[in-house]
Length: 484
Image (cartoon, rainbow, N blue to C red):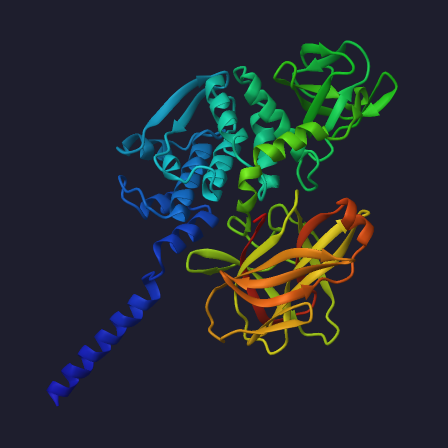
């Protein structure tokens, strides 16, 4: 009797230990923990997942660690210094803390041991660099601004135009050392390219000066110090606008902070003395020529997207949704519709240059009804025209009315649509899995032949969003596009 009670008590204790372990011990992979900590702005918790001298091999982990250091540097240089955070880095042996003397007091800079290990020109590298730049909250030494500027203009912004544009505009607000003629041309090419991309803060912000000896100011308003003069037809690219309206010399407008390529300086100018112009086509062509070798590397993914806002670089009617993480990657869930006559919104990403393949990575669905998850559109005459609609059900993939039966395995798939040739008003395409053709001779929906012949069109990738979603969904991880 006593023995049975002892075994019963031991069993209860053992059960409680198991319950406690499963309740309070986090069994997730470390990169998933790091990602969740970063998303919840728990940047110190990210660092504490790793030993001080550890350099992970994963691009995702390196990116998150680098971004976390940048966010902590931003906290160190806020209005009120976090003394506990400062002491944490002063005691941290493997992280050097530098103090820069600036016009607004001491700037605390954390040397980043992770950034240099990221793949140059890769997505993680660019994301970490953009975070570093956006974390600068007050003037830093000119040499450091110049260093970041030269790193940034060597990167291709395509695929992350919105965040790249914001970082470049933010960086140009600070004084920097003069850069060389070639680098200055690169900067100008990038600014003109971004000025033609809707959704960026530089969209339609190229201009020329109207008038002679127009005053430039250190801030938005005539009460601010004069820092120079400009005259027509000098060119400029504007980075931000003050919200207050004003009338000067009979002209109504706003004050704008603009970059002046001739002097490599930024200053405020009244918009009444600006005339909007189109992006310089020659500069845009040079930009595209410079990055032609990486056309095959254009990638759309959802890292950094939090679900509340539309994914970066997309436009359209967005319906908020929760992100879904699988094996350390963020997927964009595209839901089926409860309605027999589905009503959908869509968000789209504009693509520049020629494209002849679209590769997409996804997790299959359990839905009996096909769920449209990618639309490939062609834009001409300022309107979008559907070329291909790609759908999934639990057993098949559909491209327009063409069906291929999948093997039913619930694993990540990687397929690509190759645009091959045009026959009259339709494109001809084929669906591939690596080197294996799955469906041949897939005709697009009818398009306007005259626009296709003269090349006056551009491609778009669109994601349909059901206004009355059900539980079934396709999880999209990324889209790659370019030229074979």
